[in-house]
Image (cartoon, rainbow, N blue to C red):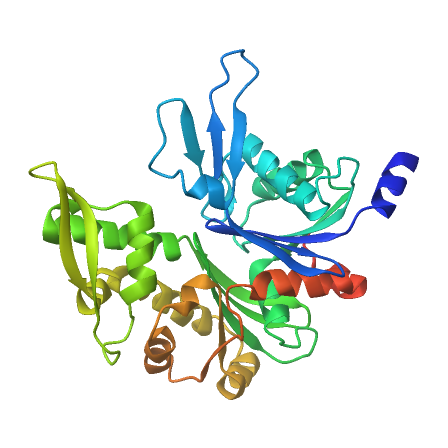
Amino acid sequence: MIFDSLAGFFSSDLAIDLGTANTLVYVKGRGLICSEPSVVAVAKDNTGRGDKVLAVGHEAKEMLGRTPGGIRAIRPIKDGVIADFEITEAMLRYFIQRAHNRRKLVRPRIVICVPPCITSVEKRAVRESALSAGAREVYLIEEPMAAAIGAGLDVTAATGNMVVDIGGGTTDVAVISLSGIVTSRSIRCGGDAMDEAIINYVRRKYNMLVGERSAEQIKVTIATASDAAKSSTMEVKGRDLVAGIPKVVVATSDEIREALMEPLGQIVETVHLTLEKTPPELAADIVDRGIMLVGGGSLLGGLDVVLRQETKLPILRSEDPFTAVVHGAGRALDNLELLKEVAIQ
């Protein structure tokens, strides 16, 4: 206990947005210190001591789809929850030590953002991973709540705020009032599902196989959700499924919009279903205040236009959708009273 309090005294508290695609780390008093892909590269250890971690983050992502037999690039978070306990622990340890300049004896208080659909077993897995990685105390905060705080909304007021958080693995839609989530829906469809839809479309239309990173590049460069957007083209490189040799095709933003129709349809339907479950008084607030878009997936061009057409409501995008969740968790970390109000058990 004495050692823990001493180690805690020399540690900086952290807020971590443990995402399917990216992990962002906020340090109390210093702000956002890193944003890296949630990827860990491990090598088989022949001595029987388990896998050895070779790289984490950007360095590990560069290895995706390019590793030899003895090395694996793993995404330990699937659909917003932990899929590989040991690798997540190694990843958290890396981020904790990086925040403390590689110092070993640190025991920080950590706030971790989780999806609202998380089960009690998954909550325990997140807590235990963080404690095993060196945390002194662990608080869990739901991503839409953190996103609302990060987007500058007053979550403690008796007014309704609607947040749509489109992440890598999940899309969370929630109505927030009086420091709690009144109604929410979460679907396992986000940026990764969009990448998957692009891979499948290119395979069907061009008989060509492209990798995850190429699909993501296509989405970032030319994908749009609205047909009102200006059309653009891009060279796509992959492997011809018939001849088995490398191939290049030119894809257009109209084709990619067609590829994304299914995941975008699921997101729009989730927004509709959440609005249907919203109490009338809070629905009236949303008519006035609009819907706040956050998360990396909300950066897709024309998405706000599509949602405005479908819901007939004002659509706002936070100043920095990509970091809204971690900044919200960071603000809660700076205000312990607010953190205790919004944290989940």
